[in-house]
Image 1 (cartoon, rainbow, N blue to C red):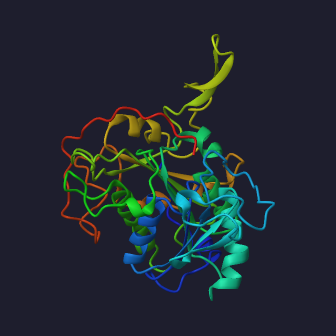
Image 2: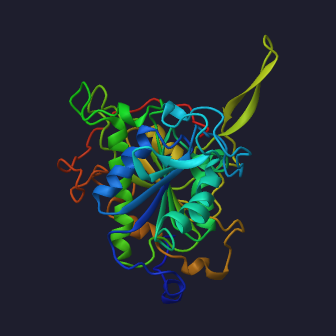
Image 3: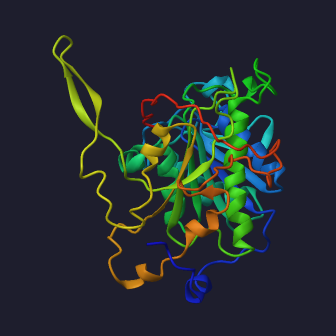
Length: 370
């Protein structure tokens, strides 16, 4: 069953933004404020004309989920990641080169709270942010288990709980690099993967912004989880413009089991696929699981979720907002006859529409607990 159209009553209950473009956007992550991926997303959204701020962790805070851990120290006790900010600096502050880029020594969830309750009222002339983007994470965050464990998602649903629409972005290239290592082109003559991740993510965000036509970008309580495969632009062009596919969180998703090593006497996680994790209860059960789509090849998964933890049986679920329609035409259904790359022809980053008649299969990457 497809979602029905957004009702007038639902629209009336939500804030309306002044214009389609030029939104006030908060960008965060769990990898740190100095990583290449977050800075390239920041740049890509600014190119689209938006007023952007970064508030992100001073060091890598992967795997913290929605945990709220505030620092107990007024000043940093060690250097930030990549040595951008030195020990002794305040535990909250700005990048030396950009007053719109903030760091805080806390978990991903607290970054959103610090952004909304400290940075926003004290250091901007804004009343709120129109949209929160979290990522682009280094490593995939697939399925409901990673939804609870990933700091990328923790920042996302913290924002949604505060009434701000939010999108989580994760990428299959899992080696973290600083923003000052980003190259305009690679040895293969292509864009740096971080740049492509930023542009793909910005293009999807802009799709929702454009389709909102000045109205709410997402209905209250809704969020989007996006996973983009490992991009190959460092060495070749076999996967540089993956199409976005409509998916659901469940479907091929894993949980952890405790693997015991008899030699070392230590435990480590082992991926386990069990029916309980992949039972489709709500939403469109005909959609492929995001894990299955990422395992299939050079495709990106786009899943819609809500933070209403009660199963939506009866009530307003029959008139649920049609978020998936707002994602189209950029985000396609898997049974489309021709899949078009995520940097489609309407994007300022496109170098022409890429028809993906043959897609290189990707080896499954270990799930990144981040």
